[in-house]
Amino acid sequence: MKFTDSPVIDLKVLDKQLSFQQDNGSMHVGTSVWPCSLVAVKFAERWHPQSCAAAENPYAELLDFKNKRGVELGAGCGVAAMGLFLLGLNDVLITDIAPVMPALKHNLKRNKQVLNKSLKTAQLYWNNEEQIRALGKPFDIVIATDVVYLEETVGPLISAMESLVKEDGVVLLGYQLRSPEAHKMFWELCVEVFDIEKVPHEHLHPEYAYEETDVYILRKKKKT
Image (cartoon, rainbow, N blue to C red; front, side):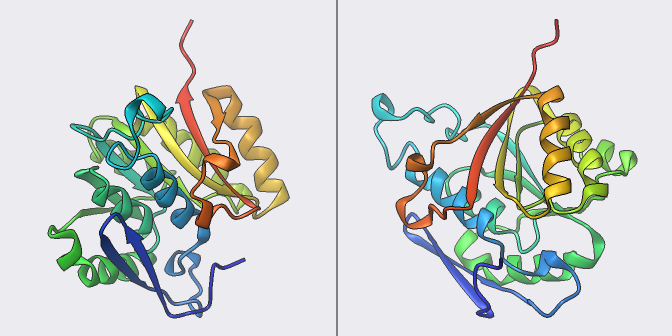
């Protein structure tokens, strides 16, 4: 399910308005805006320290982006990274495969005035260890939304997540079941590497709490 067939998707984040141009006719799924990216951003906005008192906020530490570095995997149009940038994740690298880069760069240019900064991008294939090493030291936050849909990419995705997230970092995962086979494999492999916390549905933004879409927080298992 695509969120909408509209060629332009608008997303309000705090007092700013992002606008994304999508191409649903492309052969690459990354040129569409998928719902999990919107859900993840609006979850982060709902519990952002600026929006919610710390004493009542179970995600205060997670969403305090001060001095944190982030990377988005399979970013597509760049919705999640741009949204989290506006919520304070000022050091964020946006990655995807080569064919999706024109759409990503177009949307970054489209939102440059709102972002007031040129965000960094890098080409990344999850099975390319050289590209992963070239991204530098591990990140505090790895962002991934709507990235589990092909069985053959599941192993490389989890490996990339494991390599790119710091030992005490987190993966913020926006998730919707796209393929039963990929779904089964992803969670079987994921539980071997990460401790998994599912955000309760009532903690999602009420206007972006789609029944079939979830947000997970993944943390590396402690080595014994």
